[in-house]
Length: 110
Image (spheres, rainbow, N blue to C red):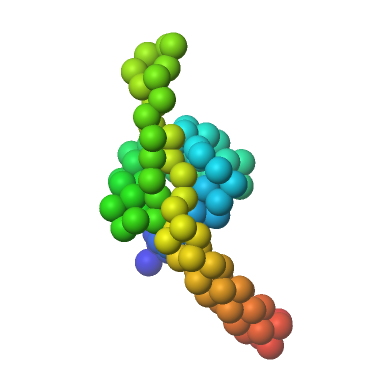
């Protein structure tokens, strides 16, 4: 078993949560999301991000609007919906529970 596979699965498991968390601040262009994730050391490429954004949009958690660009084709800007905000609140509660559980295990087994 390779540790890199497990690390990749852990990162994939939290990407949707991180994307929604970023989006709670307003509209984002996909490349801006990639920059934020990279700054947090969550390396992601467009080929991973776009399917995630589509899945979140199809689930009603995100919406988007087109904006004309002076340098190329129109740009798609994503934002979180009210349903997405509620979903994020639930995920946030789960994240807190998981973080606390891991801390308890780490503390007990130092």
